[in-house]
Structure formats: C-alpha cells, structure tokens
Image (cartoon, rainbow, N blue to C red):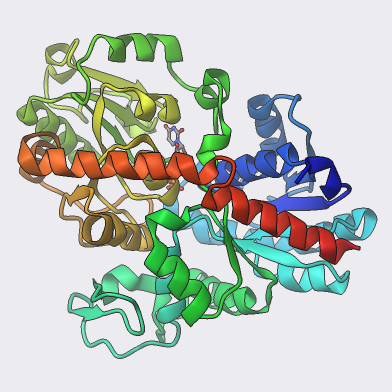
Length: 473
Ligand code: UDP
C-alpha cells in the first residue's frame, strides 16, 4: 500500500511532559510521518525547544505549543517537565497542573481539527475534549501489554490483607503473584491520592477511547496481547519497538536529550572491550538514587570484577565524592566508565561489548534492552516497573532480580552491595547467563522482524492508519 494513499490524515500526538513519555511518542510521530501522515506533536514551549533540537527539521513532524501555566499549577517558573521538578513532593502538583492544559488544548483542536488524537494516559480528559469535536482519541500508556493487563485486572480489586502478602493477579494469564505494596495505586483503596485518582480516570477513559496504541511487539508478549484484546475486549494496536525508528547513529546519539558524553568517545571505549563483557547500569530519566544506593552499586560492581558503564544522574548532593567509596574512580580507570547526566543509551545497548544491563524496568529501557538482545538485572523503583520486572523474570526469563521489594517514587528500594554483586555475576557468568543471553538474542531478532515490512508491528501500524483514514472521510 503506497503511503500517498493515506493523505491527508492529520494526527495530534500529545505526550506527558516527561522524557519516558516524550521519547517514545516522538518516535511514534516519526513513524507515522514516514507513512505520509501529518504528525503534530503538542507540547509546552520549553519542551518544544528541546524536541526540535533533538529531532531536527527534516522528518515532516510539526510541533505546536501550549502554554504551561506554571504559576497556576503552583510550580516554579520554567518547570515544564517532570524531570525538572525540584523535589519528589512536587510530582503531584505537576500532575495536577497538567489539567490546566485542557482549555488551550481544546482551542487547538477547534482551530486545527486533526483527524485523530494520540494522547497520554496521564491526560484522561483528552477523550472528552476530542469527543467535543467528533475526533477519536487513542491512548498511549507507554508500557507493556503485560502491565496494561495488570492495570485492567486490578480495577476494583481489594481482596488483599497485608502490604507484604503476595496474591495472584485475578483474571490474569499464568500464576503471577504481586504484593499490595507493588500494586500501589492500582488497587482499590480508601487512601485516595492524586495518582490513584488519575489511575482510576485513566482506566475509565481507556474504555471510552477509540483504542490503545502499544509500544511493544506481538511475539514478545503474545499471551498478554491476546488477553488484552480477546478476553478484556480492548481495541489495541502494537507498533513497536518504537526505538527502531532511529536508524542512523546521529538520531540514536541525541535521542531524548543531548548526551553528556561524546558518543564517539563512549563507543571507542566499548570497542576496546570483548563481546558481552560490559554491564550497562542506568535507572532511566527520573530516578535520583541516594548516596547509600550509589555506594552499594559502586561496591557491588567493583566486587563483581565486571567492566561497566554507569550512568549517574546529576544531583547536587553528588557533587562531592562521598557517594562512591574512597578512590573508586581511580581504581576503576579503564574498567568502568561513569557518565554523569544523559547517556546515548540506544548506541550503548546496541554495542556488541554490552553483556547485560542493570535497569529500573521503565518500559522504554526494558524494551530497548530486549531489542538489543541484552539480558537484565532488574531493580524496579515504582509500581508499574514491578510488573515489567515480572514479565522479564518470570515470563521471558531473560533477567535476574536484584531483590527490590518496596516501591519508592523516584528513588527506589535500598539494596545491599552483596545483592548487586551477586545479581551482576549471575547475569554475566555461567550456564544460566548464557541461556538468558541466547534467549534475549532471539527476542532481538523477533523485535527487528516485527518492524520490517510484513512484520507484526509494521502490519498493525498500517492497519491502524488505514482504519483512521477511513474514519476521516
Ligand atoms: N535515556 C537515555 N539516556 C539516559 C537515560 C534515559 O537515553 O541517560 C532514555 C532511555 O533510552 C529511555 C528513556 O530515556 O528511552 C527512559 O524511559 P524509561 O521508560 O526507561 O524510564 P523513565 O525515565 O520513564 O523512568
């Protein structure tokens, strides 16, 4: 089917202002734009400046901005992205503040009349906004089918006694156990918070929306993709792994933000290492680990004897050297590379020297590791990441858990250095490690196949565009 037949479909993409949501949404907009769709990304002025730096001008994506009323939202001036909130307790005001975008968003809909809106799960109100103008809204959660099924299956469930007792997720394929603590705001509770209210609204708005677009591929989680569609009856299209739409090294190097290290320097360092010999450690875009966690990672990595790249997010309290053991950086010269700030993650994961990664199980990072064929040490930080961990460990069997039990928003559980050492060695050495790596490499091939002509995600994307084109006439 030629791309010109799709014209002139116009889609608004409206991501939550946080890197983990903006990055895959921009990838998705690129993918649609490549098929001849007019793709408009709606965001705030500060984020727009950052997106246009990163995507360049050549790929046919339009960016439109709406003012984010920081002052009205009770946030400091210039605070337009969840990764720039000054402290974790500002996360809830930030989420609440995004509601103020409804009116200007509707103004844009009125002026531009796109044929469809792909809006983030954090903006449940967009279903009603779009409906006012007769426009279908698709939801983008930015997570796995597995986690989407958990979200749907836990709705109104409250048959749990204690925080730490585990229970089997009801009406869910397989015997997957989680604890009340891990389910967090997904369970029914008397303690209504901004997040639990949002989750409830998102659940309800999913049901009234046109459908859900998923950054995943069928071969990775068939049982859960089928369960979501056939048993739970949801309309969904899988169009991933979206990261694969970044084909040249420049696109990969600057994805998300400008990297804090010259990517050539980083790749040259990796070129000196043997295949599958380096561990990549990164906790996504938002988490800021505390000193004791960082020391546990440093000590665990050193004790494991493995070479590593470790991404440490800039944090005022880490300006000194007390977050790593004495003389750590000196001793690790040549063995370990520390990136302070933003790493060119896709390029690193794809390098043949990378043998495993330590991840917080954010869905983007998890899927990027799968796509690169890299097994994982899982250290989930907050709720949905605990479900992605279950998928990696229990279903796909391409990872080792570090033992994170308690969700702590933006920071995560405290883990001993011995557990870090043990998990890193288990994922890197021995027969079990080889088996996990071989499995991960099979998934990597399947991921690439899904995005190629005739592959499952390629076909689902075409089917979605075709359906939206028919609706638009
Ligand atoms: N990322 C990156 N460099 C970094 C940190 C993160 O490129 O130093 C990218 C990563 O590749 C992924 C996204 O940022 O695409 C993080 O999303 P994820 O869902 O893994 O976690 P979140 O940041 O939402 O917690």
